[in-house]
Amino acid sequence: MSTILALDTSAEACSVALLADNTVEELFELAPRDHTRLILPMVDRLLAQCGVSLGQLDAIAFGAGPGAFTGLRISAGVVQGLAFGAQLPVIPVSSLAAVAQGFFAVSPPPSPAQALVCMDARMGELYFGAYAWRDGEAVLEGRERLLAPTDLLLDTTDAGVYHALGSGWRYLDQMPALDAAGFASVDTGVLPRAKAIAQLGSFRLVRGETISAGEVEPVYLREQVAWKKVGQT
Image (cartoon, rainbow, N blue to C red; front, top):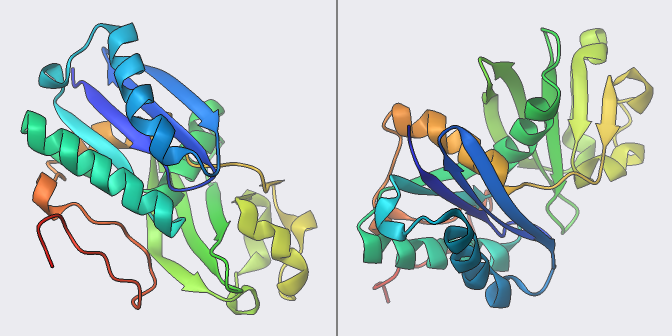
């Protein structure tokens, strides 16, 4: 069984999780501006609580984005440092996929069902991705997108199978083609969590979907935002 450390600072919350022996332990704190201060002590505390060292890990997973720019830079930097030091592979996980995974894992829905994850990207835009639940994993259908609320169009014929998740759905009044009454559920308060990232990371580790520490970079979905890897000028 794989042992995976996961962390996320892509949104308002700061969380770390450890998956080992098919169980997941998580520390979670809602702290919008304290990610830098909290993340490493939380990692140390969780590993100590579980009696696991960095050298015993198989990989480190992290919420790669999209999300808050500063939070993504923090998690990418921390993951790079930990992975370099322990010579571990890294598993980047979409923050939107983590939201879908967290929802589906709590109460797996009957098929068919889709999690429509829509997070506020600021500047009048949204991050959006649609996910299906397949064999315990939230799987992306299509691609993740950055778009304006008015550009979000869905086929509402089967709206009853859609679960709308994320802060972006607070802007439903700007989506004239959509009606919240047609959704199976709507939750605008859900956030990415490290527990879900660890679960998704376990699937990706089995498939060999890892990168090296030097390849770690955030996913912004905004091309004009540049990220410089450690060592670059």
